[in-house]
Image (cartoon, rainbow, N blue to C red; front, top):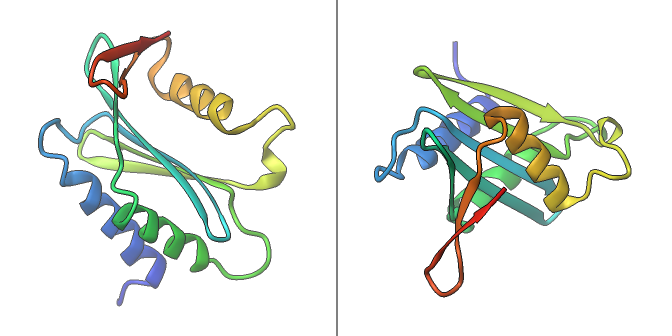
Length: 136
C-alpha cells in the first residue's frame, strides 16, 4: 500500500533527526509549535543525567514541519507536534489548540513538555558565546 503524504513527511522528519550523528537517536524529542507560516522547533537529547538542547536546521526541518501541518485536511489543525524516539521506534503526538490552556505560551509550554518526557533532569543549552548553560 502506498504511503500517504503525511506518512512520507513523518518518515522524512525522522531522517532529518537521524542526521545528528554526534548523539544517539534514542531519547530524542522533537517538539514544535506550528501555525500558518510559523514554525518553532526544538530538539532535545537525553544524555543520562541531563538533557541536551540541539539547534534544529530551520530550513529543512522547518519546511518539513510546515508541509506536515499543511497536509492536514479540514479546518481543525494541530498546533504542536511531539516526536519522541525511543527503543528503535517513535511516538508521535499532535496537540490541538483546544487542548492548550491560556497559560501554555511558547517557552513555558516547551519546558512543560520536556519535563513530561524527561522528568526533572536539567537542560543544557549552549549560550551565544559558546558556553554551556544549564537550565533547571
